[in-house]
Length: 297
Image (cartoon, helix red, strand yellow):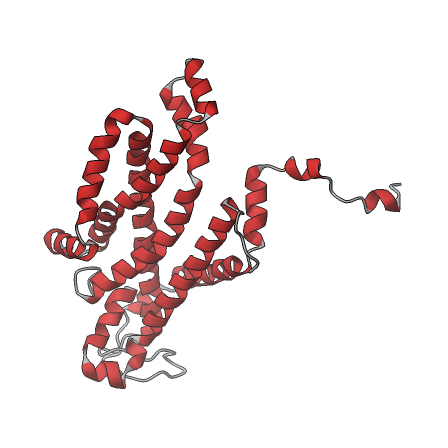
């Protein structure tokens, strides 16, 4: 039997450092209280958006339009008698898919292009001048012109947001590669004759990915806001398919804005809550991958 002294023995420094970097990162993330609050909120919203029956958002009660919240309709009904609660949750499903997929799309483009620019000096000048040209245009002007040209729709909006926002992760990953390509372990691998593809995938990329994870988490929230704005202007997801953005479009009517807030307020509140939750998670990821300057939360 182990003695009490052995059981109570503190963990040594060598035992702590023997933990894998991924495990230490996950431990730091779990200790970030706001990040865990954000994770819980996101899980609740995602589960609610998944379990809501799609049919419930389209059922109409033609003689029960403009009804205020009640036990039968928690968020009231819209102008043609559809349940606002069901449409808000289903709208969340659409908005979250647009935000997540477009963020992943832009991240993948930025990862590939930024890696090429940061590792190969011959490509750096050409790629970064193209990035500079794209980033010289105001984001909203470029987004509105492109949305008007390609037309509305969920797939079009995902592709559009991803294509327009890829220069940001490109600059992030390029900066990391510029630092790492001169590192001793990269130079040693080149001297040993290791192929560039293996050096990038095996040595450089794992050390450069952390800032990109932070960007992706925050980009999801930003892209949800972009979708909401485009749908509010009529250039995003089109009715009858609900999204948080086109539910806010109801507020363009003065009577609905002032007299029927249940038609637009739930979507507005959920957008704010989701964006805050994602930002909390982004802060947690940042502090977990880079504990320097981490504060107690």
